[in-house]
Amino acid sequence: MKQIILDFPKQFKAGLEAAKNIKVGGPFSNVIICGIGGSALPGSLIPDLDVGLKIPLYTHRDYNLPSSANPNSLILAVSFSGNTEETISAYEEAIAKKYKVVALSTGGKLQEIAQSHNLPIAIVPNDCLQPRFGSGYLAAAALQILANCGLINDQSPAILEMANNLKPAFWETQGQALAQKLVDKIPVVYSSNSFKSLALIWKIKFNENAKVMAFWNYFPELNHNEMVGLTNLKGAFHFIIIKDQTDHERTQKRMGLFADLAREKGAEVDFVDLTGKTKMEKIFTNLLLGDWVTYYLALAYGQDPTPVKIVEDFKKRLAG
Image (cartoon, rainbow, N blue to C red; front, side, top):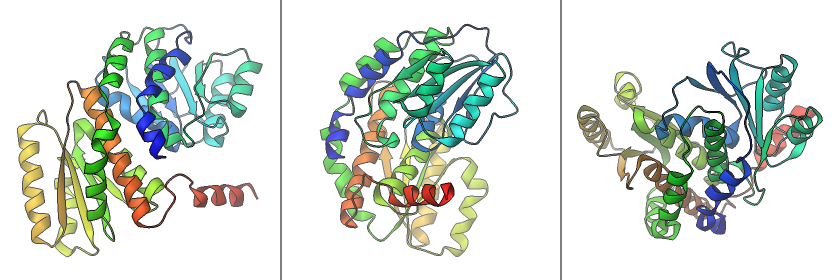
């Protein structure tokens, strides 16, 4: 996994290349990304990247298609393995209804279905072990597909420049230091609404890499409900607040006041400041830091951060 983190910037060029000729014709009323787990991460990231998408984008993490799907939807079925049963269910329904469909995968059954129906599919490399490690491949490919379909301007120059600016090794020491603070704590990750994909993905990385329970939310919403839980705080919580200088000034004030309240109740709080020239660079730089934090927390617990044995065992029980 350490080498995968260090090689992460290389994924973007490969993702763009995989999707360079993948498109379907419009017009489109919305975009529906069908995916589960790490394969669904492009659906969380793209709205926060501010790439100029002018129609609604929904992420569907379930079987079949959502009620928002219609003949003018662009259905993007994303399954890293190609074998995710929920995504295949949605993909097959879209095909049966003759909707506009594109698939994104490393192969598997999704590729077989696409090829048997002569439908477009972008195939990204399968060299990063797990879907959650391949967000560069998947996000770049998904953005290129949206550009090819005329839904956003071509983002490839900005993506390649951003990838060139990512310095994974630079964040390792900071990630290791934060991981040490989190030993025997319950991580809770917060951000502003503008960067809520980061809080969600950090939470997922804590779950799958460090093998611990973790939670997430975003400001200002959490100030109206979840924050009340501080009244009767049960558990060794450690709050991580992701903040950016572009966050609304009242949101930044909310973050500071919440940190004060949490500390008064005995919880620990760390702020993580976003850095980068563009919003895209800020997002992927922050995800690299999250990878290091969860990698070193896994090692602190004596865990191999790569496999997710309990998920595989669950799938066997489900199949049985």
